[in-house]
Length: 452
Image 1 (cartoon, rainbow, N blue to C red):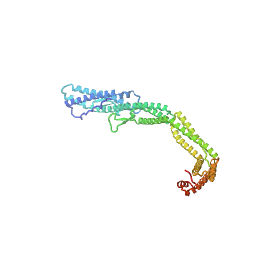
Image 2 (image 1 turned 90 degrees about the vertical axis):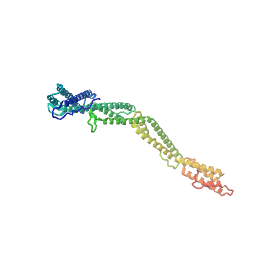
Image 3 (image 1 turned 60 degrees about the vertical axis):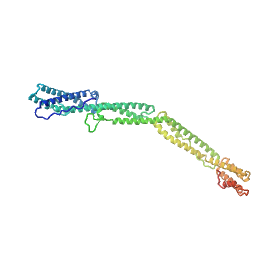
Image 4 (image 1 turned 135 degrees about the horizontal axis):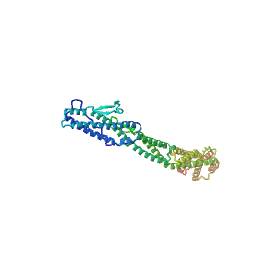
């Protein structure tokens, strides 16, 4: 704030013979420069914004105690400066009596400039000295003023640095917190309903308390620089502020995740409804197919078909309710669970349908095989063969009757295949030479043969 550094020190000289005229003149010139520097520093300290803030603040803690001592030190600094001014003025008056000072005047000047001739009031509260007054030399006076000035300046500069840094940052973070709370409220992140809503309340309380403490006790939030003795050496302690800022960042990320969930929730809910609807339709088809199989297929074990996934439907209703109430922190994990379970349910329904309709698939395969062999027999001009007609009709009656005995029907189809193979066999040795066709026919003969 434009405050000069510590007062210039007074070098002085050890006690000894009276000072010479030239030595006195040099000392007076130096002391005059020192006096001017001291006055400038004290006036700057008096006008320092940090001092004015400290005087008008309701202080607590460390700052209250140190400022009480500092105020007394500043008051004494002006008293000491007045004593310094008086001593310098007396010395100047003695020196101005004659152009060439007499030995007596030089002795008097030596005592004024070097001796402990300045009487000061007690400073027991600052120095612990129990005396009512004390005698100091100009050098001792300057050293003490330098020390107290540095201590007072350190308190003022430190408090001003903390007040200049932390409250403004806290206010900016509080504004960001306010915006975050508004956004959180809009997406249903509220205290008591969402963990991040509770976190926002805690961050709000922490920032409110932190700002009040910084304003009333700024010195408690200062970290002195290691090895530095200069006034104001160090930096504001931002540990609590940084912790609150990190917590707010975490909440913002959570709210962004909630926004993603909200934007994606409808699509995911629609997909879940579709998957469960397909699972329900598949299970209904499986139940209908099971009744058909039991009616049309005899001597076959048909697995039971479970009912619709009632629990999943109930949870889907709960998910829709969470979405309506903006309870995204509950909706997101529920959707994750439901999506996997709904996909599993659809797969189970399809597997159930496949297992139930397996006998019908076997019957369809046998029907196809029978018709394929009938076509082959017709191509070889044996469609009217009595044995083949008889065995075809028997297999067909079994496959197209209800209930169908699959085991017996399969044996009937195999008997028709064998009869056809036996009928084709003599043609393989026909001297007229139907070689390629007969070999093809023979390749499909034999017991257990399947038509591809």
